[in-house]
Image 1 (cartoon, rainbow over the protein chains, first blue to last red):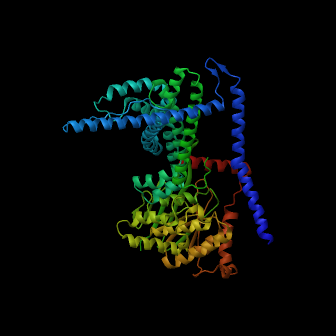
Image 2: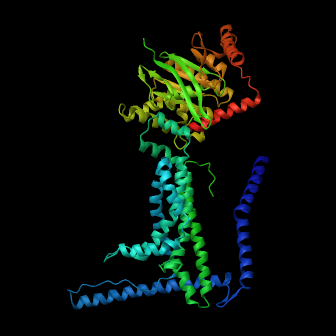
Length: 323
Length: 282
């Protein structure tokens, strides 16, 4: 009888220790932040009114959700109307071929989130497709490293805003098509993201590849592994932890760069939403921008969590502390 | 009969910032098929360097190595190496680690089924079938070394090279593995070169013990034939006067003839030189 009660007590201790660290402390931190935010915000006055506090932001969030729902209803009605009209004309004249038009309403906050998300994923995906193979090549071969290192070091610190005009001009000059698969603004944002976020993946992959343990290289030599087997079986697995460090840094940068690029280039996305609200200058604008700021942060956090989950799944080193 | 493995007058120099460092000078050794040879010497005497040259991981500056009358160039599975720290790929299971070697060596000569049986056979030799699906971080140091040995044996090498294979293990595990190795050796009768700094291990396992002088410019000092009938029992041998005599001979060589008498400062200096040689080589 004694033993179960002792274990129960221990279990309780452990559980409570876990919930203190895992739930109570973060909740406490958030509450303190909201309190400071409320107190601080009420003291900052701008030409557009008070700096938005938590309550205002919550209201604006609700209004953005409502706006989105209204817009969806309008869109549905539009399509229903179009269908009815086409059916009517077809009934009068059976040879009539209906032209289907897309709804052209104003993109809502949530449409902009969706646009930003797929743009960042496309840009990050393209960057990874370039950076990982190139990183492996650089890591394996000192000559390639020496040749490419100066170029990498110069391009790495370039701000996205500097790239943007060049990318815009190149895309408009070279992507000429009557029936474009992608919009130019999407390509401009995507390439800017790619150019800015590929460096951490490139460098970390190269370092990871160059740091393969000497003993494992000797194993590969004794087995006379072919180049491909050597890379697939020895080099890549052992570089994976660092590769993911790079990928996570890259994705973080990609997200930050994208918002800036969208603001500057007026390309659709969350950045444009922020800029439009700023230009709009209504009494709601600051609150809406604050909603966007929080949303940008939250999405950035989610993206990092997704990468972390993938890393947990892919990496062989289960002892590595991932955070 | 021609010599199986002929290490002929090899010397090696490593470039260092202070000029070339001659680690080995004129090392010669002839080894017959099925012979178990130990190299023993103080640390830094270049015994691992000899092994690495035979493995083909280092190139000798002078001299060369003949295996069955053919010159050794570069590393290869016919000279399998058991590394000191197991060197298993941490992302593969024990089975997959052996499989990597087997696929590489027997890809053209064995069917899938035969390869599987061969992998399991080698894991069985080292008593590791029960942990075939475990990854290196899930098994003990001794078990890792067993898998390392299985991997090397699975290559069916002409010469098995072992670089202080049991050096990182505790005494009891080491004794276990030595017994396992003797058992395997009885069945397979491999040609083995083993590096060790353990006198008992050398006498217990070897047909011949090659004692090396201190570096730099290390070379073969003395060679001791161990004429103890096999199978050898470690307990029975402990009081055997011949065993004690062999042991004493090795100890005498190491601690009287080749005693490291350098003052402490010189020792650190020579260590530094050894390190710089390693760095230059890395």
